[in-house]
Structure formats: C-alpha cells, structure tokens
Image 1 (cartoon, helix red, strand yellow):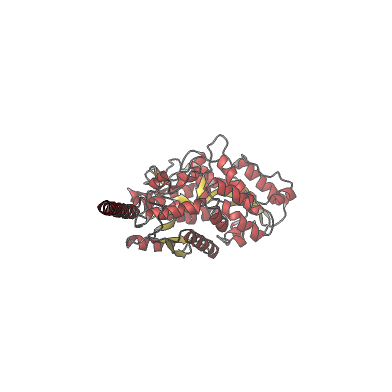
Image 2 (cartoon, helix red, strand yellow):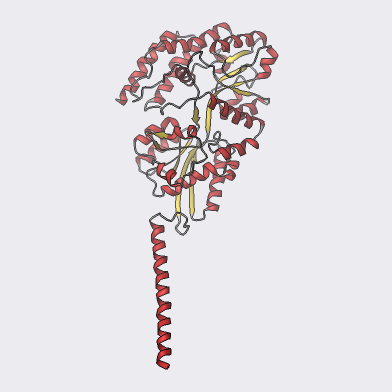
Length: 446
C-alpha cells in the first residue's frame, strides 16, 4: 500500500510538472508571436514613433491633444511630435530624407506625393488596409483615390477640400441680381458680375477675379484636359487657345468693370482679413477652398456662402474632391504597423475628430463627418454641405503634379496671371510665353 501511495504521489508530481512546462512553452510561443508582429493586441512591448506636420498654432494644439489621447488609450506607445509652419517644412523634410531619418508619420501634400513615393520614401499602406489595421471601411473611394499611385496607397486623406468661390448673397439681393445656382455658366458669371458692379455703387465690384493656375486647371478639366502630360515631361494640352480663352474671361471682366482692379485685391495675398469680400469691396471671391469659409466668415463678421465654379456648356465636370492634407508612413519607420494604427485612429475616432474639428478639411470617414456636421457652427455646416455638393459635380482627380510643378506654378503666377491683371500682356502673349518656359522646366523630367 505504501509503495502504491508513493507511486501515485510521483505520478501527480510528474503531472503538475508537465502542466507547468507546457504553460511555460505556451508563454514563450506567445512572446515569440508578439516579437514577430503577429499579435497586434499585445501591449507589452514599448513603441516609439515620431510625427511631423505643418500648420498654425491652432492646428499644433489640436494635434498634440489627439496624440495625448492616443497615448492614453495605448500606453505602450510614445509619439514624439515635430511641427512647424509651411515655410521651411519641405526643406526640413528633404534634409531628413537625405539623412534617412524621416519621422514614422508625416503630413504629406498632394503636390509632393508623387515625388516622395517615386523616391521610395513612403510605405505602401495597402497591406495594412487589407489586414484591417488601417480601417477605411467607412470611407468612400472618392476620398481614398487621391492618395493612390499605380494602385498603391501611399497616403491617407485627413481633410477633404473642394475648390470654391465665396459669395455674399446679401449683396446679390441688395443689387437685385439673381444669386448663382449650381450649373451656371462662365457667361452668366460675367453678366451678373457686371450687374453687381453697376448696382452696388462706386468702389464695389462684382468679383475678385481669378486668372490663377487653380482656376485654369478647373477650366482645362472642363475640356477633358490637364496641365501636365501623363509622364510629366510636357504640358498636357496642345492648343494654346484654351489658355487664351481662359485668360480672356478675366480680361473681359476687368475691362467691363465687372471685376475689381488689381490694386483692390493684389495686396491681400493669403491674408484672409484683407480679402475684398471681407471688406464688402466685392460680392464674390473666386479663388478659395471650402475649408477657408470659417476663417473668411469670421473675418467678415457676417454670413457668407460657398458656390461652385462656373460650368462649361457641353463640357466635362471640372471639380474634384481635393485632399487638403495626407498622413503617410515613411519607409524609414521601423514601426510601420503602429504608425498605420495611429492613422486609422486619426481617421475614425469621433473623440479625436471632435478635437480636430475639421480644421484640416472635411473628415473622410462617414460616421465622423455626419457627427461633426450635426454639431458644427453655421459656417461649418455650410462647409460640409458644400463638399457634398461639389462631390455631385466632381469626377476623378487627376494624377499628382510632377516634379517641377512648384516652379511652374510660380511661373504662372508671375508671368501669366499678374501681368494679365495689370494689362501688361495679352492672353496670346501669355499663353505663348507660358508654353515655352513650362516646357523647358518639364523637359528635365525626361
């Protein structure tokens, strides 16, 4: 009996030992899985990320608060912020890229997307979308496509904008001029702008004109053309008459008095407080984006509205939904999955977006957009409603601008638009000069 009892006790000890051994093996296997990145729920390992963005102090404060919220919900993550104004941002990015030290998460602009992706500096986020780490299930393709190149997702839109005109409908009513409705034409704009100038008194004009490249892009899209060729080595339209006709619209309005002369609007620049519409010097500002309405209306101290740009009779849709800014993950990042998780949080978290408050543009996730719209100010509601309207009058966005586009935009502003405003050059001369100089710039891409 004693021998049997000791035998049973030995068996029990061996059984307990085996259970402990198996548990230890299981724990080791789980640790191995975590280190290989397959256990995305584990929060044992500390992760450090860096995030870089540009913007105003208000944007900095909001973004820092969202980072704190994410770290509170994910204690294993530490995000070090780096931020600056627009001036110097891309020089800083270029320096970090050259040193192979780009932050994990970077705020990207549509203008530079092709350049950075083409240099293999941005990670393809598609695998993280497919795995569900980056949740875009509540986002329409219209808002996603702007961040794609060759079917790869290199950037997530964090604020959708649309090209727009700011209008003071009260001034239309005062002048007895019918307000603009979606679908109106370029000729109708010229006619009503002239009526506004005639009826609103001396020193007040119908429109602040726009002979800039953004408006020209809109005009080209209406003719099913684009500024650049697909390979970015030349201009994308062959007939200079398109640019001539576009510039002639501004010339006609200036000559008729329908548009404010340059001394009224050229000094304003990007200073919202000095926009002629803010000071009731014009009833229409032709060169704004939807996310600017809140600031413009605040500066004006009175209700304003947004309106689509003119339609071309028999033409294509000119509008598109523009990504105001993106978030991308750099290829220098060793924590790309965690960076993608943060972008998913930035996109889908209602609490985070209540803090951000659409400062970068209309959020892309449907439930977030609806929530913010319901709780927005009157100006905020108008911004949301305008983007929805613009979506109805939009078609697919054109590819990101090629290398050299920044130089070309400066060329257009300085040697096309400004001389047209001051009557220093004819549309024909401007079109010929632009083609010659832009072609030289783009030829460098060959």
